[in-house]
Length: 300
Ligand code: SIN
Image 1 (cartoon, rainbow, N blue to C red):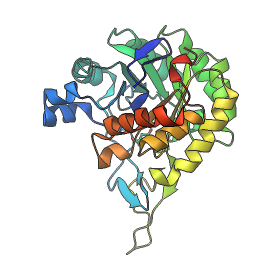
Image 2 (image 1 turned 180 degrees about the vertical axis):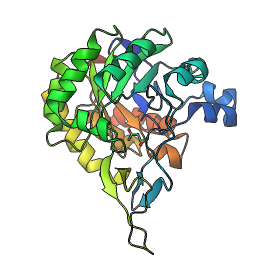
Image 3 (image 1 turned 30 degrees about the vertical axis):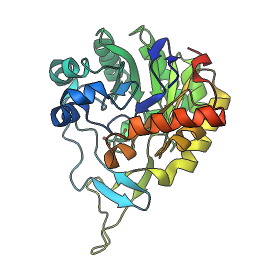
Image 4 (image 1 turned 90 degrees about the horizontal axis):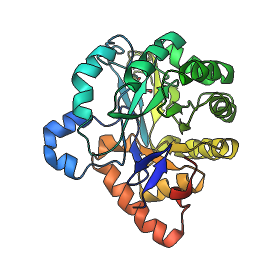
C-alpha cells in the first residue's frame, strides 16, 4: 500500500477506522500482540470522549437494517480524566498514529478537551465529533456552517496538532459546513457520520431504540456518503477522509476516486474485525489495475 502524508502525519496507507467502530483495547486482550503485528488500520481513531464520563443511551442500542444498522449508543465513555489515565497509555502502544475523537456540549468544553488531549505526544491528530446524531448538541453544532466555524475558530489556538472535523450527513449543505470548517482553520474533514434513522418495535409500534432515534450506517448509506464526499472534496482544499458503508477495496477505491485522501471503515468492522487489512489489500490490488488517485500527492 502506498504510504501517504495526511495533515503532515506519515501513514503507511490510507485505511483508518471510523471512531467507535473498533475497540483496540478489547481486540488486544482477545488477540494479544498478534493484533499489533497485523494491525488492521493505518491510523487509529479513538472512540469519542467527552469532558465528563457518560453512561450512554438506555438499551436497546442497536437495530439491524437491510445492509446496515441503526445505533443509539450515546457516546458512553470514561470522560477526559479516565481516558488519559487508562485508555491513552494503551492506545499509545498501537503501531500506527493515534487520532483522538472529542465531543463537547459547548465550545468551552471542546476547548478544554482539545487543549488537554493535544498536549500528549502520543496523539497525532484530533477529530472533532460535531456530528453524533445521538447527542443533540453535537449534531446541531455540525449541522450549521456558522456554528462549526465558531467552534473551529475557538479551538484553533488550543493546539498545533491537526484538527479533523467530522461532518454529519444530516446537514442541509455538508459542502458549506466543510468550507466553513476549512476557512476557520480545520486541517481535514471526515465524513459521513451516521444518518438519522428510526426503527419501531414490531410488537408495540413504539420506538425500538432506548434513545428513540439513532444513526444509520453500513452499505445502506454508501451511495449517499459517496455523493457527499464528492461534493465536499470539490468544495475544499484540505484532505477529506471518506467513509460510509465501505466494505471492500472496490468501495474504498470509489471514495478515493470521488476525492477522499483516506478512507475509514466503520460498520464492516463489527462483521469482520480484520476488515481493515482485507480492504487495504483489495484496494492495493485494485490501484494497480484501476489507476486510483495517488493519495501520496494530496495536500498536507
Ligand atoms: C454514539 O456513541 O452514539 C455513536 C457515535 C457517533 O455517532 O458519533
